[in-house]
Length: 388
Image (tube, rainbow, N blue to C red; front, side, top):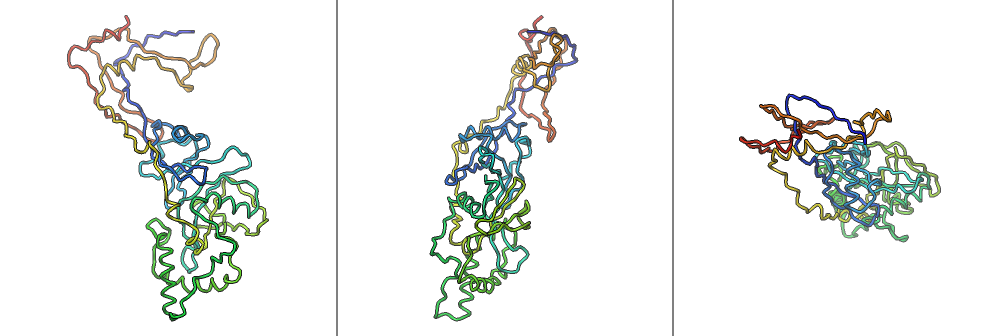
């Protein structure tokens, strides 16, 4: 191999610190198998790496293909950010709720679509529907019928959504007691409405929990039940194309069984649940269940508190493979080659100044290594590092 030797005089010795530049990221993995609950992992990835590095590390832990994983930041029942594999890991903060979804990238006819869960509100309020639960990232066929899309989504939620029986008139209101008066009926239905919706009126819901709105639901609910009492809705939820926040409808998706539907990766889909269907068939406790991987309970590798100066010198004089961006130009083949580089000390001055590289930089942040470096005050022996 071609060897190039260069003598460079320097004013001081600039030593790197042998510290592993890694970080641990807490994530929830949502499996492609709809019956497997999400699992919490603690993943070790390169500090200056990308989302692709995180997916590869998580894939090895969870035994799933890393290239099928998509990293997202979920906040307030919606996707705050859906990352690409090239996005830097530094975008993830410690306080973020990171959900990683396994998708089906084996079928070229599939498209990955974000899906929001919303509950219809019958009262006249600012928001006609409220987001609830965790959003989904579903691999759906690009072209299908309305009925097939509905079945695909139900299958994706099979772990916590049960299907109604054919003879089940679930849309009908509960029978009213003949002994109770009109006032009691109203109070009874108001209580049911508030109990059915109380779990959704959390601090993270879109609208403030108002007692007036639940009270106003009762007459609308009665009117709705009279209209639907004979026929009833065909499905537990209706489908809409919405914006990325899930709070504005773009267009409804036809409920006709054989209506052709075309989806693309830029679409956001919402499932607008009928309140009674949500109360009867959507198991909120099962939807919130998750398991924890062994990595979550594993102890964090303790940070090395003290580094000896000799370790810094060994790292400085060790062989290093140059990256693709730092290729070396070979005069023989006249091409840039990925070479190796090695520093050696030829001679030292009477007074040696040593500089420690404590700072690392990238496009997004600057990081300082605050590890203590142990060095001898007297009799520093540099013989083993000088080759002359």
